[in-house]
Amino acid sequence: MNYAKRVCRVLLIPLFWLLVWWVAAWMIAKPLLFPTPWAVLKRLTELMATKEFYLITANSIWNVVFGILIAVIGGGILSLITSRISLLREAILPIMTVIKATPVASFIILALIWMGSANVPTFITVLIVLPVVWTNLDEGFSHMDPQLIEVAKVYKMPAWRTFRILTLPTLKPYFVSACRTSMGLAWKAGIAAEIIAMPRNTIGTMIGDAKQYIMTEDMFAWTLTVILLSLVIEFLFAWIFRKLDSARKVRKEA
Amino acid sequence: MLTFDRVSFSYAKKPVLNELSFTLSDGEILAVMGPSGCGKTTLLTLAAGLNKPKAGKIISTFTKIAYVFQEPRLFPWMSVEDNLRAVLPEPKQDDGRVSEVLTLVGLSDCAGQYPDELSGGMKIRASLARALIYGGDLFLLDEPFAALDEALRRSLSELLKQTIRQSGASALFVTHQLSDAQIMADRILSLPLHS
Image (cartoon, rainbow over all chains, first blue to last red; front, side):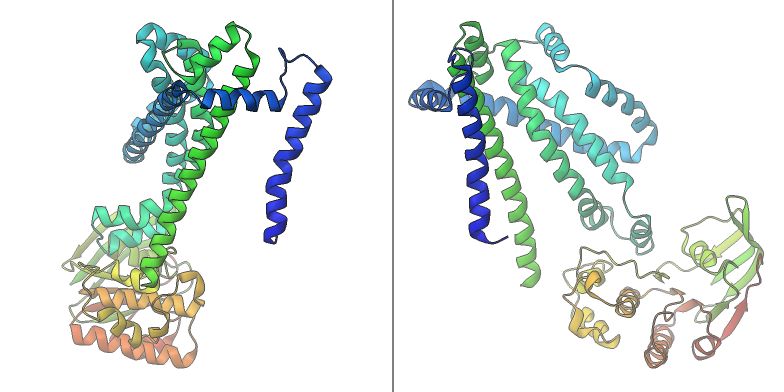
């Protein structure tokens, strides 16, 4: 596909859905129930003109991104341990299945009882993302090439080198896939936790307030903010991986 | 020295080796021949310590084993030269050994290429180069010339023999070709089915 066609698609598809939204809002004709894109955009720019918007957004980014980081590091370390100890893997498997099957709201309410509302969004993000990371990496470990493992054994490669040249490249696609899946889930779970736990100055709390006072435009504007944040962070993540890959290629060519 | 003393091995109750005994002396090259399924590759994996015998004893004084597997088994995400460096004690300090060995096996132009960019024969040569650069006091060679043409086969078998002789190492050399065994080996161990 040439550049012009790609640009057209990238611009036209969102424009098409904006048009659908606008037509739907026009047909419903009740701004309190379903505001127009224009009204939402106007409200979002108003919000963006205030200092609080950035404080609230930063708090939610912190809650979710910090949760993702803990889950990725924790899930990575856990999968490394369970790849070595099969009994532990078998013991953990049902817990992960239960966590994945349990409704997020149940965990949020439990977490609210256990801890202060400020920590609930991060805790919930960890709880939702960690099983995804662990399951993906566990799958990666099970796909390690036994023939290459034998090569590493026969040639007595040190453990760190084996990890670097065999384990990491094998796990990379599984890790990338885990992170991609986790990003969306993390935002959904983190913001849901904020809506129920209502910690101060967070996007979820703003959405909760908007619901309470039937400020539909606010609710749409904050939801749009979450979607944009999720996209930006996913884009950043993809960009970092691309940079790491190209840096490796440049090193090889040099 | 490597001694197999009445070694038996089976895969899921399917016997492959049955009370096999032989000795490989220091500096000796022993060709292992026999029909498909007689346990030639299994014998090498046992000698390498990748499998344990179900019965009998394996006594080995060899400490450094260079193994050329039947399949090239190169790391697909690493270039040819990085695959060679990976088996060195200090991968970043190869003192020109990598390019020297690649020249010996005729792959000097392929140092920066990745395994999926190489032909089957080139991959086998890269795998051979990896064993050569690693050195070792025991070479385990599992049909290393199977995918090569006659001329290359002869030159590489001469090169391998020369390298093994010069280093004083020993080798177990699995082959289907009597001519390869005659060029390379001091002795031939013939394995019947279910030896």
